[in-house]
Image (cartoon, rainbow, N blue to C red; front, side, top):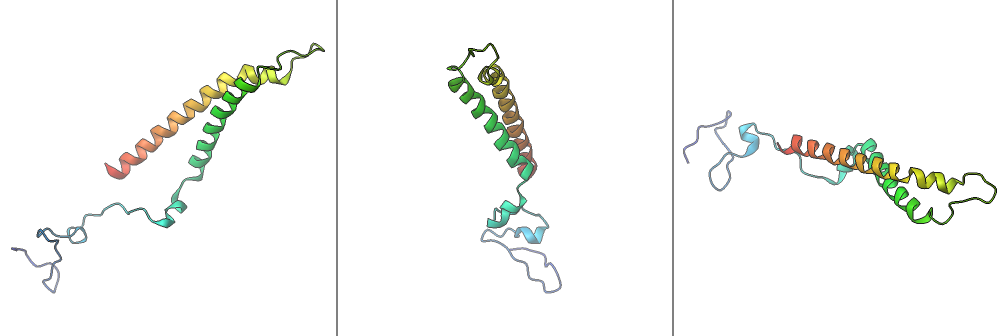
Length: 114
């Protein structure tokens, strides 16, 4: 092992193949996942995930449950008709938010591993 000394003591830590350990070379590795990593989760992203899944689930439920009560006997527009009319837009907005969140997560992963 032909290694120049590092530091005042002349001792250098290497792995079993003779390569210097990362803390000796100055390279920093990303921190591993720890149980306290949930504190670093962005709460706005969590709310957006819940919002996107709620829009998709709510729009789908409006299709299934809103079909039965379309017309009112007194001539007014029932709320179920309004909900059923806006259900496709809710699903579309939920899917768009889902795609944006997946893109954001891909960018964050690329920053950590790239």
